[in-house]
Image (cartoon, helix red, strand yellow):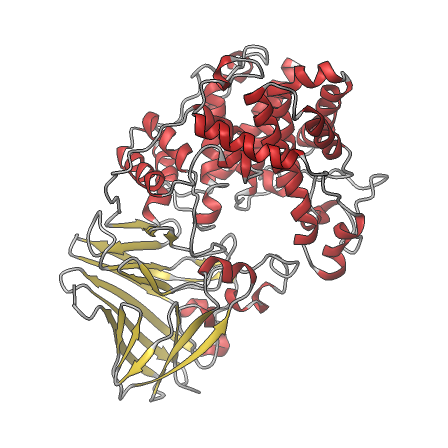
Length: 624
């Protein structure tokens, strides 16, 4: 798709001089911005202008190897980039020279960093036990944030390069040099960066579009050599095609909704840049896969800021690229997506274009696009909520009591496999919300450390199936790996009843001694009830099956029932015993849930039978 559309890119591409998607320093477009946005950016820049640029000590880079900590280096690293964006935008708005010295200091500091790759990502081309990058022998690592840094500087060069050059000609030349040696050269010289997808036939994840969108920005606005610039654009398209290749036509994102903004949405950034850089010559917004990829986030929205957080995703997201999706919903002809984005923006005043410059260090192209295409939303936007959806590619189903309403019940359930990108062992897991509030939940993911993306990943409790809403069979949890997967998955929804059925037995190892385990979800909208039916066949029953359920509120246990917030669980008290344990939360999890604890409710079968089946039921006291 993408390669075919850009096969003649050499003749389609506007020159660097002709490519003018946004007003530059001194041009009138900055004056026409909303007054509130200008004021917020300038006010923030005034505070930043008084501060020294944060240091990046070598020993903080070494932390990752020494003790697994990422954040002590990453915090000042990202602060440098966020501050530089804000100061640049403020100077373009104001044009009084107040922020120029600080911008120069920030640009120079970033250019003098030994590497733009963060310590957690620089392992590929240096010894894993080597704390620092050795520029005398280590290959340049082109990771997410090296590419992001390059794009930030490229757009700064585009916006204000002439003004910086008037202060000292070495500054714009240094920016171009560093973009060339840290981003463009390694991108063109090597095909073996795993994220490219060019040296293997394995699926690629968000790294692919996220890096490619930033490399594309570097080429379009910072490269003067026309043929080499076109070569970069062509290779971006060849690599990004690999990302599209592994996506199902339904557009489902197996990395979860928090990564959508740098996965599917980054692909939208690529397509929008290509469309602008070819004067509309590359236009793929009407393609089914692209439309569905953009529409994914609408179908995994629950209520408020709650989203279906399977994989490494927090439960609550305040930002999911609404301005980008609203803008692109027009060429896509997707009014449902537009209405969803307008609703989100109308109900969250923080979703303004200035936030990209005051509180973010990602998406420089997206930031400028949002700023110069801002539409003030109508504060009276109605509820927009998808009734149900089935992502067959990733085997995720969503359903709610009624369309365009956040009242009643919401269910999301999944099959898939235990080797998804940002995988958790969670075949057959589900979440349930009642009246727009969480009840049966997925914890999400804690602070990233060295262990998170290592062989020790599944030592982390929130990655384990026993802390998801699955089943513990003969004392065994699910195992990680592509072979541990759901089978015989069936889904249907006639508008009144949604049903999802799947076999879970292949998610467990031989020690579980399970021959068959089929789970069926039935959402009966007429009764406003969700039933979960399990049928098990074991070679031997060594201990009773356990059904863990992670709860957002402390369950109140009664005879054959448990109240979890507004949700009521009903079960056969003769067939199950119920126990509850508290799980205290830390760091990122506590911040996401805005509470100190979650609770695990476990139903344990009172009998130990090789052939067994049962049903548990969820509803609300009113039944409506």
